Length: 254
Image 1 (cartoon, rainbow, N blue to C red):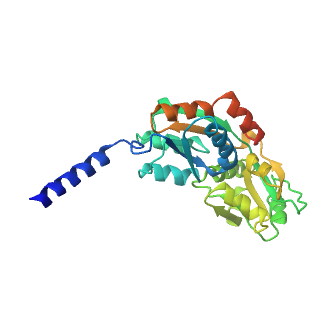
Image 2: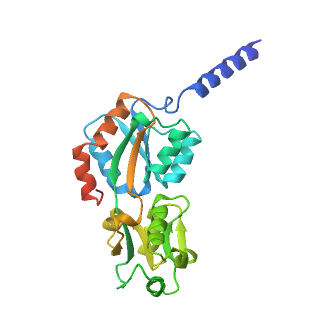
Image 3: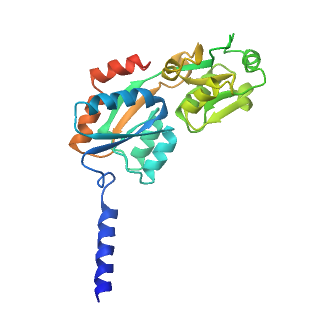
């Protein structure tokens, strides 16, 4: 009889927990932020600044936007999600996970080609032969073009310039843009396509070319509140404030 009662109570508790909305099991004094890897440095600074003035713990989880969105879709306990493109936030909205009323425009970026600082590279981005000469038998480090925002933007730019078909077999696709940056820093890839903000944080790479905005979709970072609470709303408001924008600008965002 006692075992039956315990089993019934356990089943009840599990049912209640399973029915709670995403984020409801989080500590009232913590916020979990799932953010694109290209935001690592600037968001760490923004979090540090905010925590110095508020008694709350903010836990950032960084990765490729596509990977983070899939984790959230599968039930990962995220309170905020900042994607490097609109596609993955729209995907969560279509799934009923992100409420369009709680989506904000966070920041913007530019797309650049980088090489190792030690290399002097001349590159005519509209000529396949120029790319091949610069690669010199190596590969072009990019985010995965079918999923990672930086890779999607890279493909759009290369298609716009008419060189995608000649370069698509010479890529080193990565799971996020920071890995692409690392490959160039280590000189494991002669060239990489990353964000301007990534290039600025590294003294091991130099910008070879900045893609014109017209060659790719606008690089927008939407922020979505996945959990509705006063703490989450307050932190989201800070992230889109003029104070935060000044920090973003210093890190190469616009």
